[in-house]
Structure formats: structure tokens, C-alpha cells
Amino acid sequence: MSEGLFGAIKISASGLRGQRTKMDVVARNLANAETTRTADGTPYRRQRAIFEQVLGDKLQRHSLNMGYGVENRMTRTHPGHMSESGRSGTSMISGVTSEVAVAQDASEFRVVFDPGHPDADEQGYVLMPNVNPITEMVDMITASRAYEANVSAVQTAKDMFNDALKI
Image 1: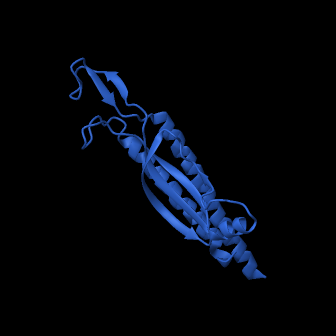
Image 2: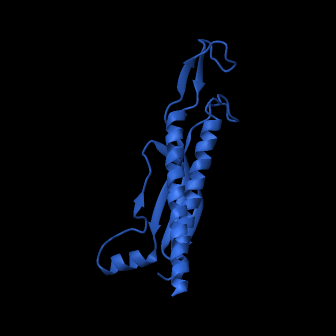
């Protein structure tokens, strides 16, 4: 590991940044779960954090030397019903890159009958955001647990450094 003792902490820090971005997206979705009109006149569209792990030049050089046609982008979680809208949180750690993209969920809006609502159409139906609070809470719990795991990895690395210094 060319990063020495701090490589593990840098990798965990990348995971912490990614999970923080995911929690921010979930919080934004929950805050706008009832927003029926945005600046463009449509209901709020749910967003998702899409994680991408990229192995760098080291793996690519190795795989090309071995005769494999491996691309630089090895794994990607990217559901087909989503359209990518932006990237944030890129960090490079000795051949490992972690990127988090924020994508809008392209699923249909919910239709609710509420004739007294100011955004209701002539028949009394209102387009509501495609945000499901239960799904958002599950995503929040998942992000929270992953965040805790990365904090634990940082603490373990720190403990190992302290034990190594005692030798």
C-alpha cells in the first residue's frame, strides 16, 4: 500500500463522505415528500445517491498485462429506471476512487384525489412526489449503519497504529 499507515483511514473517510451524501439526499427527500410544486412547476422528484467504485491504473495495468480487457470502472450500482444528474464526493486514494452521483428517480408521480388542494386539476386530482417515507427511512438506516462501520474501521486503524507504536 503506497499510502502507508493512513491508506485505510483515507479509504474509510471516502466511505464516510459517501454515506453523508446519501443521508443528505434522504433528508432532502423526506423534507419534500409533500411538495407538489417546484420551480419548474412539477412535483418534487425523488433523488437517490448512486455509489460507484473505481479501481485505478494499478489494476488496469495489471489486467492489461495479463491479457484481460478489464475497464477501469469495475462495479457500479445504477438502477435502470434512474437518470444521472450530477456527481459529488470524488476522492482518489492510491488507485481507489469512490464517487457518489445524485440521480433523479424517473418513476411516476403519485396521483391523489384532493379537490380542495391548490394544485388540483379540473377533476380534483393532485400529482404528488414519488417519495415513499418508508423507503427513505430504510435508506437512512442503511446509510447510518454503513457510516458507523466506516467510523469503526477508522477507530480500529487508529488502535492498530497505537499498538504498533508501543512495540
